[in-house]
View 1 (spheres, helix red, strand yellow):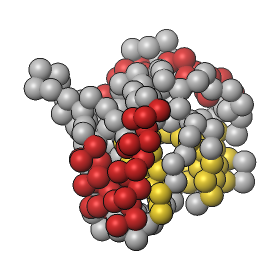
View 2 (cartoon, rainbow, N blue to C red):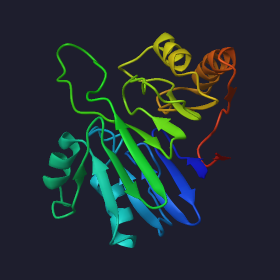
View 3 (cartoon, one colour):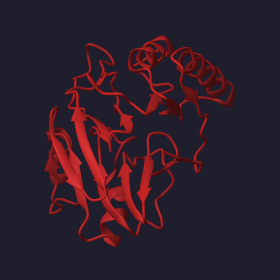
View 4 (cartoon, rainbow, N blue to C red):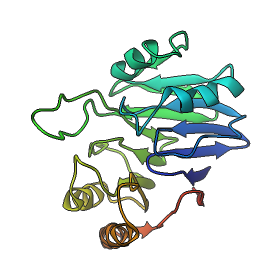
Length: 217
């Protein structure tokens, strides 16, 4: 399974030409070449994780595409220009098969940003029992041995110590940074160093992927 990191929160997973997109949002360059997509997972409704324009680009080239998201995202899609696009609502405990991908879902809500801001739906996804992507939360997938962990590097809802504790709790074999577009180059280097240290502490390997770079899982 090939993983390609895009800008900010978006990633592509590919097996034998079939693609799974996760969280293609507003901080990610307009998607092109999406043919072969079989599914999209959207972890929550914030625009840095999905937009009607980005989703529409995938839908246009892949009419049989399946979309998986929590209820809040399904409502947002129904209210958008993509209102007639079918969405399968998922929640913690669900498992779905979209060959060649098996998707297991964890968690229920977005991390708290501030008490004045409503808490929204958020699901994490485990792909083929290998890649775990928690969305905007630090939900640990209990009872799962995670091969590769996407680690948030910076956000209004987190601090780097929380990301480090997340890595220590999961103890992945591999990790890479995501959710990093709010950082300067110096900030990315700092967060990468912290994520690398705790990944290595648990016996894993850190890959400081930049947008467009890939990793074979």
